[in-house]
Length: 115
Image: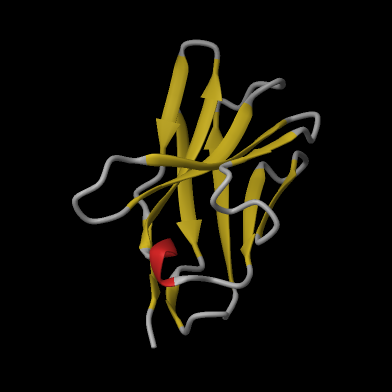
């Protein structure tokens, strides 16, 4: 079992920044992939960004150049720096841990971009 705890969501104006963090605990395996997904009201959950344990990152086109994912393998944490936020970034953001057949999710943190 892996537990994921997110933090850092909130309310921000368009153009602002937020940083999300996720701490993983439990049975952590090397070679995992961690990432962030989001779900807006009435929409399906979608990929935001993922990062391998080796540091290779993958981003959704909609966030490229604005969001940066990073991780600390020693602390089992993954972070998402979100800059130049837009109204359409409003969603619940979920941390994800994936290793082989194992797939775990955090409880989600709300990000609201509003003027």
